[in-house]
Amino acid sequence: MKLHLFVSTAAVLFSAFSGSAAAASIEEEYGPAPSTSEKLEHTRVNRNCSHGKKKHVCGKDGKTYRDKCEAMRANVKVAYRGKCKSKHCSNVKKLVCGKDGKTYRNKCEARRANVKVACRGRCKKGRNQLFK
Image (cartoon, rainbow, N blue to C red; front, side, top):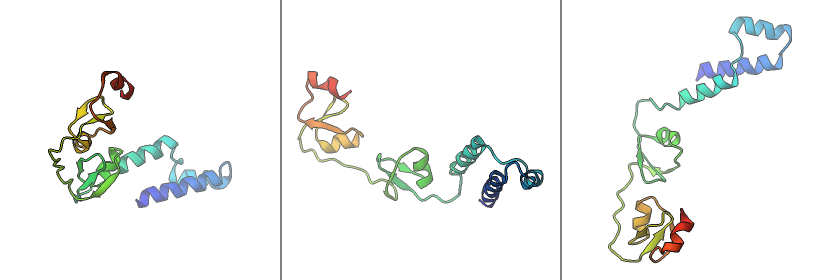
């Protein structure tokens, strides 16, 4: 973290004094300012999540992640801390049509399959094409 801050500060100073004797002096002492691609690569390295303690989180996709960092890497927002609780759906039969064009026993079953509900009732052939 300190190195990144130092490099970023050097980059700011370098760009502020660009073309001046001060810029040449900074570049001689610390090397050239990092390019945009180098900065992006540094960000990717920081997101490798290889940092000891596990603090499980449940993602909004219903999957358990090792920690917040792992969820962020998967582009998933955190729903809550801890492992995801199993979602047991009732046997209540209130059919819904999922946006994937499949009929589910109820909303819970569709959500558990990670599918949004398109409408109530069975999916109909003509309607299925609209959701794909």
